[in-house]
Amino acid sequence: MYQKPLLECANRVNLTSSPSLLRIFLSCFFCSALCLPAWGALSPEEARHFLLRSGQPVTAERISELTELTREEAVEELIARLETPPLRDLPEWFDEPPLHLRREELGGRAFRRLRNRRIEEVRRWMGEQLIDPENSFHGHLLLFWHNHFTTEARVVRHPKLLLQQLLTLREGLGGNYLDLLEDMIRDPAILIYLDNHRNRGRNPNENFAREWFELFTLGEGNYSEGDVREAARALTGWGVHMASGTHRFFPRHHDDGEKSILGQQGHWQGGDLPSLVSGEPALALNLTRKFWQHYISPIEESEQLFELAASFRESGYSLPTLLHGIFSSEAFWAPENRSILLKGPADFLLQISTHSLRNQPTHWTRLMGQLGQRLLNPPNVKGWPGGIHWLSGRSIIRRIQIARGHYFWKYLRELRRGAVSREALRFLWLADAPSGVIEEATHPREFLNQLIHDPALQLK
Image (tube, rainbow, N blue to C red):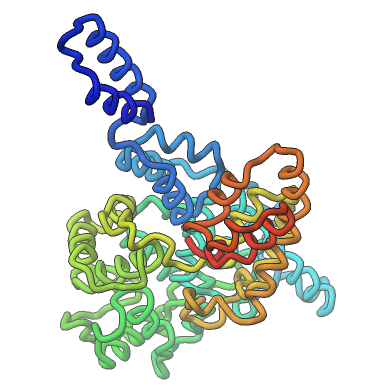
């Protein structure tokens, strides 16, 4: 900030005529340079973008820390967190036998009440991670994966199995995609959700097999109906031992005949499906595309996307490699890709909770449901579609009401006392430059109202 005036002064004065003056000028010039951010460090705008997209709270402290780092350093720091996710306390009942074994002891009504209460505890456990400032990156990544390997509480109806699936997904955040596929094809909650615990050799059920190809691995257009039928046969007898709540293979219900899946012949079983899809180029591309849409842009056609997919496949499907590539890509940092994604309920409420005096997880999970994202109950097997689907006339009004209820009076007092500046609030709350109407607002009350109604509050 001091260098431009110094250079203008240098242009007007013949410094070579006065060695002492030249020494003073050079001293001032290089001292001012030490006050500037390090070369290549993140700008405040880039730091805000990085925090918003990666599921972290936008605070002045975090922005200050990130502006001391380069892009690569910021990404490395983030990816390193995957190795040591924060520990979360589990409900006391998690180590107990499955609740349904107590149905007769408790009686129908008491059993249903206890089951529903425990499902709410699982929902709260997940919600805590979404708004915890130290845990939100992991929490939002967990939500991404639960929206990929979808289950619904109203269908599964086993709280312990729902929580076990979330724990398995959480443990795999920094692992390998093929390992995660191995875990999910044996996960009791998802096997129940997609009816595979009822898949018998004489009458194969194709639900799990179809979603395995379409949603979990290859994506539409990269498999045939014959592959679905044959995979359903491979999955016969691949079920759940309800007394223990664990996966179990039941040979008497299995079709042991030869099958042809993705052009490969063999007496396949359910456990063979991850290795059968591992050689398909569509496996890496389908997941990379989902990460691209989630973190970068809804526009998929990009050479960078295909390069990221190729690197992901060459890494042996390392998830940290994929995430590192996404956050390090030119597309992620490109100005044209900023503030073009709509905040989902979890993104919106994370930023609200960061500046709110309320921190009860139950409160925030309830608000998520009001905004269309009731945890553990996505609309269907495809999960929440996201994007523009988050917005309706009702949800927009509710978002504004929530922002006003948590922001308005607290910051009206602080603005009047001079404890916070308008510029700071604009920068921390909005993902982009505000509308001109905000600039014209003179009274703090009017300023806050315009800020809360600004479209940029809904973007990331």
